[in-house]
Amino acid sequence: MFDVRRLVVLQEVVRCGSLSAAAALNYTTSAVSQQITALERDIGATLLVRSPSGVRTTAAGARLLEHAETILAAIAAAERDLARIATGRPGAVRIASFASAAATILPRAIARFRALCPDIDIDLVPADPADGVDLLAAGDVDAALITEVPGERPEFPGVHSTPVYDDEFFVVLPAGHRLATAREVSFAALAGEQWIVSTETGVCPDVRVFEQACRHAGFVPSVTFRAEDYHTVQGLVAAELGVSLVPALAAFGGAHPDVVLRRVVGRRPVRRIAVATADEPAENSPLGTFVSLTRAVGTRLRPSLAYSVPERPFSVA
Image 1: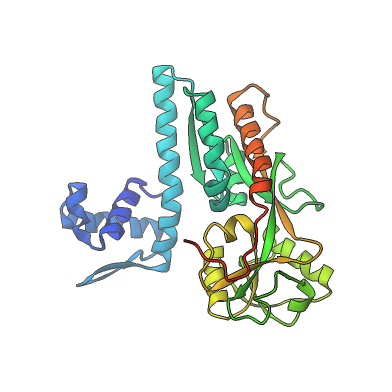
Image 2 (image 1 turned 45 degrees about the vertical axis):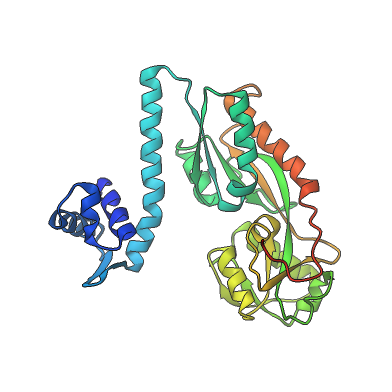
């Protein structure tokens, strides 16, 4: 077990680029160095590479920083909860969500919830679906945004799932691709392409949607790159290293200027976004209200996300 307070020191050192972050933390440079050394000893790995020009994170340091956000956010949420108990305030609804849903669906739901329940806070915890369900099981959040494959077995059978939005997948092509000028693309026409997939494994719903689309088109894909996020996927496609299949919420929320997004001809692949809760929430409870509002936002997204796919390469103004 390591001292989580040292995570704050690590974050500040990396943010400032050197051990001179001590000034912002009211420590001496020596004390900051000692805190980092102690953290490295507790972790059992080198976290920073020090040089005269500053510091940079090792692979272990970068990964720990990713965890630090979640850890420190959970601690802050616990402190707020305890403060509410002490002051008699009603509490909060804690929601875990992956990035594209947090950027598109949840803001509207949160705004409407605040208007209806001004005395109840919303705590938003960034987490991929599987991590969100783990937080839900541990009681660290009240709900988690998850993804599922329509028509297949439940992704997380131990939770109550409320459907929110069926997120259509679009083919992502380099701007100079032979099919870039097509309005819609037949998936079978991409059988010979090199594919870029958005995860390191084939078990997440998004990858299963992709594999299902390939099966229906009658081919086994040749996967050449696997990335951890859709931003990286689009960068690889833009460099003409392959093509991909990306859900609309992720694709249109930040499309690369050197790719085009095209609908699939015929059967269109989708993933289902849902709200997972431990049990079905009471209708008039704060959690039940939030789930209902989130589902209502998803319903209204359907016509607004019936994208008019541009004839020319999609770009973000």
